[in-house]
Every structure is written in structure tokens, then in C-alpha cells.
Image (cartoon, rainbow, N blue to C red; front, side, top):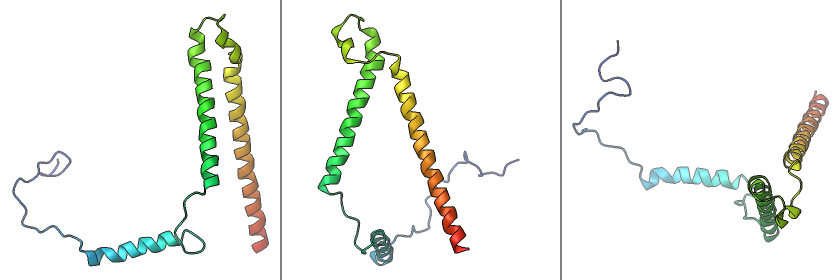
Length: 135
């Protein structure tokens, strides 16, 4: 048995409430703003807020995005559109054989997993050495 008015489907009262909804004034908000500014300043070593990316970082980022977009477009055309184009068409000479469409991503994925595993192993071994020195 459930009690009346309990639960998700309970009807809400249509009568206006006489309770006043509390609001935060500027004096109450300022200490919180100061707290967040202090936390933000703590993120950088010199106490200043973090800076935006430099021009070089932006160029490198744009280059990585461009290369990723080119690879994605090439792979999408290769795997999705090429099977519907006649095999004698001239466009086929710009793409690898279809057997590589699975092999290359599989090899890249396995290499990625290998490097991630090696990185985690190196970090764990390094942490073990540090804890042995401390003890």
C-alpha cells in the first residue's frame, strides 16, 4: 500500500504557497565567486589564470584536424562509395584494394592498444620504484 500523495504520479497542490522563495543577494554570491577565481588561479603554476593556446599550438591543432578529416573522407569514399562504382572506372586507381580496408584499421588499433598498454605498464613500474624508495 502506498500513502496518498506519495510517489512520482502524485498530484501537486494547485493552491499557491504562502512560503517566500529565498533568493541570493549580491553579498551572498560574492564569496562564492571569489572561491572560484581562487580555484582557477590555482590551476596555473604562477597564480595567473590559464592562458589561451599559442599560435603554434593552434596551427598544430588545425593540422591534426585537417589530416584527420582527409583520412576520414578517404576511408569513407573507399569503403562506402567505391563498391557502387564500376570496377573499370578510373577512380579505382587512387584507392588501395578493398582487403586493406579492414587490415589497416585493425593493425592501427592493435598498435594503439600496444602503446597504451606499454605506457600504463611503464607508469605502474615507475610508481612501484618510487614507493619502494620511500619505504
